[in-house]
Amino acid sequence: MAEVQGSKPSTGLRSSLNERGQRLTPQRQRVLALFEQIGEGRHLSAEDVHGLLAHGEERVSLATVYRSLRLLSSLGLLQELELPEGGRRFELASDAHPHHHHLVCVQCGRTEEFESAAVLAAGEQAATTLGFLLLECVLNVRSLCPQCRGARAG
Amino acid sequence: MAEVQGSKPSTGLRSSLNERGQRLTPQRQRVLALFEQIGEGRHLSAEDVHGLLAHGEERVSLATVYRSLRLLSSLGLLQELELPEGGRRFELASDAHPHHHHLVCVQCGRTEEFESAAVLAAGEQAATTLGFLLLECVLNVRSLCPQCRGARAG
DNA sequence: ATAAGTGCAAATCTTTTGCATCAGG
DNA sequence: CCTGATGCAAAAGATTTGCACTTAT
Image (cartoon, rainbow over all chains, first blue to last red):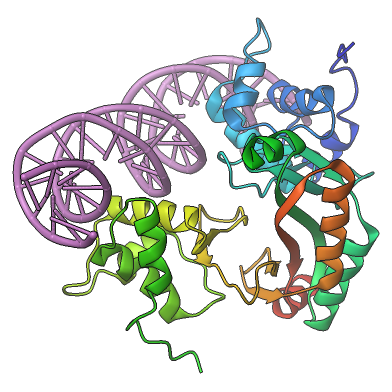
């Protein structure tokens, strides 16, 4: 099912790179393709990416994974997460869901995503009031999921 | 205005610790007092805390700073931030502003805080919908401050 | 060709731990 | 006293960097 080929999703990647005099390498394509294959809501650390690409010919050195994550983020193709629990993580930046929010269970780590026009509006209002230009707006709701909630309540 | 004395703010600290069979040590008091002295909106890393407490008798070893930050956070007296730019940071947890949001300039790092009932309401609605129990709700707005905005438009 | 990118290993952080010593309750 | 806490230094992770070699353009 998750059989997506690295075939030709890098159209945007190639042009972004060319503009900056940078090159489209198989490593960069693999890293980006990995995020595209696993789907939008997934959060991966550098180590995760390195591990997932460890297959046969697909391997990318950890140093290059770090370099690629930074590059792809700066190109706006990946988004660095802001969830403190457990190191730096990245997810695919989505045009469809540029300002999506996270409901995180602080107990078990379960994460659900959601969107909210009201939140975006509030963020925009705050930005405007202070003269800032909003780029992205992410709400993190630290909470207890149904299971952990039950467990704690005893 | 922000003239808070380190004198006797540890009332809550002492009792919280006693409940858990833990001790009120001068190091823990110093770390907490530092956050109280610098005021609510300030974000400090472990290294910052260690540096700021480096004065004469006040010094606290870095290892203890780390241990204290974790402890104070678990007691709810400090709050770990979720801003990726530049390592783990903490701020004083405030009863007055439990769910405050951050407007962060991605260029220069300038950070402004604000509150919003609408955001909290949205967070609560999402939590309720999915059966989660909301603990805390933090909106991070990545943006460009007036200065950097001007510079970039240049 | 030629400058950018990669892999590897070494160098840097950042954070955690083991252990002997110290001190709060 | 006795157990929890501290400081130090070593250990463990996480991320970055120097360099010789490879490769997109």
